Image (cartoon, rainbow, N blue to C red; front, side, top):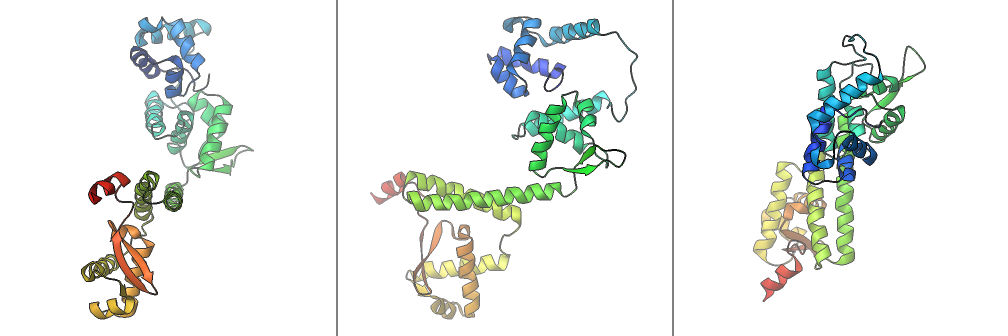
Length: 307
């Protein structure tokens, strides 16, 4: 059965979701189980309106005892973790699944996360999670594609072992940062296509600013405090002058070296969020002015203000 046997916690959730009126397919999706697993579980242990977790757990245990003879309890070992460890894996995996990671992949990941330095083989994972080798293989491929784990030869045999490196978090962080920057760039291209004054342009502008700031904060590429201060000073000068100014005019008025003005202008152009809600505009050769950001207000808001 994909995902292993239903646990008591699974049955409690099934009972609660049935009481809320959810269908078998939706319950299966939330648990990461086939719809048929849920329908059989309810059919074996009472109709939807009478399904009780305690009764279902007792009935399941009774059927399991009839199917195979009892055997002495085995001590907890590394290959057969104590119940507390299994419970932790299930709870932690549920939290990860809530972030979008597939449930089975989450369980495999937490097993690797809590393994020793040598990692685990596919057979280890199958025994620990009580799932099929195919389920483990699919989850391993998913984690490997995300660069959250790596393979290495088993010193004692021909099997591979799976481990999580200490820098896995850095790689995942960098991948997210790059993706956020790509989304911000794509949103900017969308604004150019649809126009900043359209509803689509305004939405894309809000989205682009959010992901651009997120990328800056995550990558640690935010400008130094002095650079931000200089950029804001240049913006204040342009607002106060209320007319376009050249770099030379700005340098003279601020009593700064020209390269300092150039660095401040470049900083604003690289990270437009510095100027929000204003926008720096180039109106001639090395000549600049400021205006309001066209994507800060929606078309309806601008129309209302223009009345």
